[in-house]
Length: 364
Image (cartoon, rainbow, N blue to C red):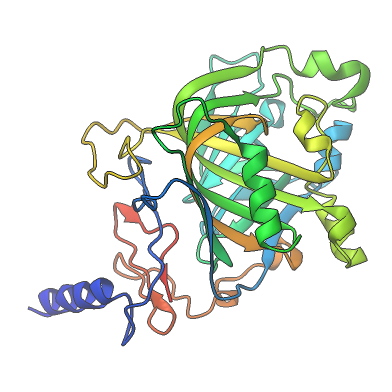
């Protein structure tokens, strides 16, 4: 009886979007078992929109430095990270198993997804997964953080030859934020996903670019039509970041990639994607398909990838902190999981079931 009353209470609170207030931002879910990512339907009107939200805390978290990866170094003290802080979503250069497999990585729901570069194993250049990983650089935001806005793009089915690139999405969001640096995560329906991935671990003191470039990228670039991926990305125009200390910290994550001309402009971007089996093929159709198979491959996305639809939570970057400094009490009203669910009462509601994590929550 008690269990029934608790579930009934959660149903009422959940359906109302929080105590005493039904004005919530519907967000997105990621099934922890199937990795089937369920967005709420996009606006029916095609085009780009940005819905401003209450200000978040503007904090991203980082391990290491992307310049360490570019230089091909492994710093002293690189240690295995137990992914017990599963409140994070992000990207980086990671390894599941020995550091010799260091490659493109994506982190979500307490799992590190890594495209292995260890050519002595049967999983070479395939995506492998574990809750424990090594990294020389990774960047994250909290899965429980309140977004500063929701960015939406939907392609009109009547405009079949229209092309909206990932870089154009970055530019639109950047202008909507008046030039502030930002990160985002969300589901992207790609018209064509274009990507690269290192095929050799950058750990041998050989710079990633310059004369070694072709040795690190021995596999041809990916061009994948009509696919969906969870994407995490960050962008900044350093000329518009007035805080010198913040500029310095952002350079630990953003750089010019010779394989991606879009990253060489004033707006520097960096994004990874994890392909998923979609719960729905049409952003305007909220039905869920039953044939769920699981997560796919990790990619370092190129900014000329074209997209048909996207719904993303956007976070202005005001602070870049070391991940070891993160504790759950930094998130307002965060309660550690208990008996299979988490409830946020004053800022909205978030329920964590044993099989489904509400990835973005419902916030006022």
